[in-house]
Amino acid sequence: MSALPSNAEPRPGRLPPGIDSLPANAVEIAGLNKTYGGASGKRALIDVDLNIPRGSLFGLLGPNGAGKSTLINILAQLVNKSSGTVKVWGADLDSAPRAVAASIGVVPQELNIDPFFTPAELLDLQAGLYGVPKRERRTHEILAALGLADRANAYARTLSGGMRRRLMVAKAMVHSPPVLVLDEPTAGVDVELRQQLWAYVRELNAAGTTLLLTTHYLEEAEQLCDRIAIINHGRVIACDTTAALLRRLDRKELVFLTADDLAEVPAPLARFDAELQGPRRLLVRYQPSRTQIGEILAAVQSAGLRIVDLTTLEADLEDIFLQLTRGAHADEAGPAAVVDRRSRVGHGARE
Ligand code: ADP
Ligand code: MG
Image 1: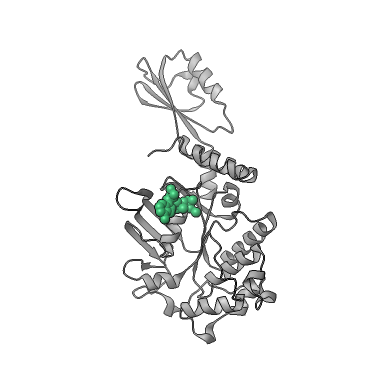
Image 2 (image 1 turned 180 degrees about the vertical axis):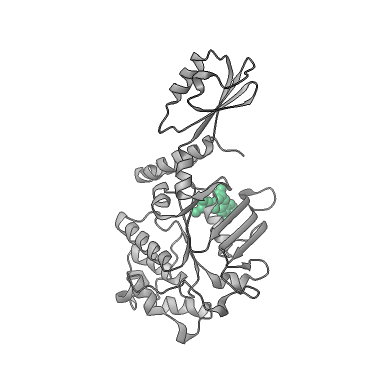
């Protein structure tokens, strides 16, 4: 898989009207809501704000049912949003839907390939749909980049699962979109193909394409993405660089409510990152990788504090990550484990 078609700098003519330079964000989402089946239906997205910087390899990470595909399908104009604004490559989804479609290629979660066409025919059809003139079509270049050149004229039904998935990626690229979206590209694919797809995604990104991929594998997002947003129950609960997000995970807060007024942080707690937030409210920040919670509790005890309540903060993110990490293993255990994970996901969420 080499000789990648470069989607880095689109022709000036492809920029939406009114946009005379490349946008800072490939995708801008503000106040996005989606409720399926009318006002009383399922709230799949709730007040989502999300910016995807141009050139990034962005991971949308969340457990099953979190709302990932809903968001992707809104970008692909397969699902209508309930409210909010969406811009792709500077074009507004409401006022310039065609410009949005021209700027984005979406590889859906489900494989849907007509088995009676060949890859070359499918790509040509797709190019026709997008109005790409014949002389500008890059059918063979794209097929070659995806390792499908020697199958260009074979019926799609004879392709392996891995080849079909690559063909889906090829289809999404026929109009050279600067933004490519992959919905769970590696769900249910074997390890070898997963590695291949990862390598290809990295190559595309290095060549300048902005990539958005969804996954419920923490490991995948961690290894592949430079930025990660975590979505759960339709809400984006974190969005940061991968490094910052991982650092954030290693940070917990304990809040002690004391029975007696405190004038200052008691001496035994001074060696921790402790702060008095009120006369009876003591906050202690710590890194679980470095400090055992027992050490803090021992210090509280040696300070002779009478505790009436104790809460931990930032647990939500931790919970999600635990579920996601477990989720990756649950998948290997089979469908029963997947169902089981779904039922656990609600724990600790705000709804
Ligand atoms: P994810 O891709 O993160 O697994 P989805 O976006 O597919 O999540 O689903 C988010 C929520 O919306 C789920 O509760 C799901 O059951 C619901 N949902 C998705 N599609 C539809 C639909 N067409 N009609 C009704 N509810 C839907
Ligand atoms: Mg999905």
